[in-house]
Length: 125
Image (tube, rainbow, N blue to C red):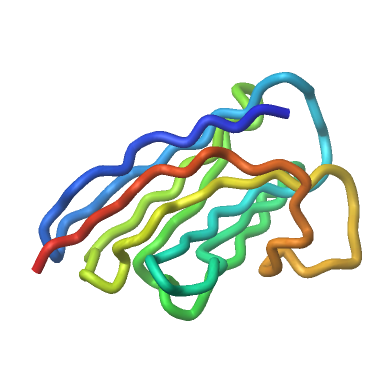
């Protein structure tokens, strides 16, 4: 599976961004896709995830209420809409795909089998 993330950029605090992740190379009917982010000097952290078949969504406490994750089942595309951005949201954002079922939490990076190259989001104050 190849994942292509896009939509990052430089924005002002309070602005919104729409990140997109396109999956290709292999079709899958179960599993999940997630977004993680990593700021310089910090560990990679969970942002949001969505189950591929049922569309159940999960959010980090830091983004709940500001982030919405959705998927286009037919196009193998996942969207992360981020609103009310703050400088603390500045990071490289990665999308990931976890194939099939797993006992691992969707909030952990080890649940995912494939990772995109990342897209940079910079929020200025």
